[in-house]
Image (cartoon, rainbow, N blue to C red; front, side, top):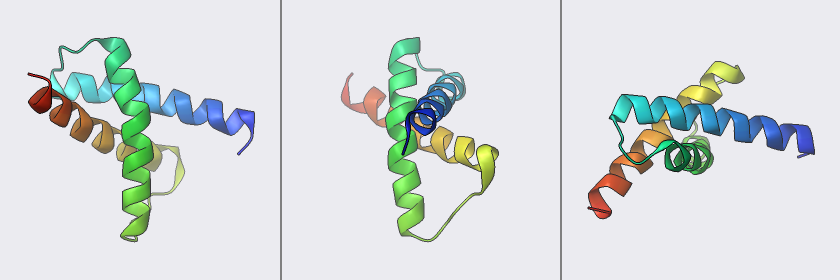
Length: 81
């Protein structure tokens, strides 16, 4: 993975974190949602790949990242209360 791919992945994760924060009505703050989006995207991408589900293109990547970020925001809200 080169630098451009890494920056694109971070940008997609940040966008996904923001979208997930809006969906989940998170009060954790923008930075927290962006970080959870980046981590959630990586985790969800790996899990979806393991079970054989793949989404092609940028839209599919964003959908998977939003799903992962929503899950992490949900878990963070449950465990950090």
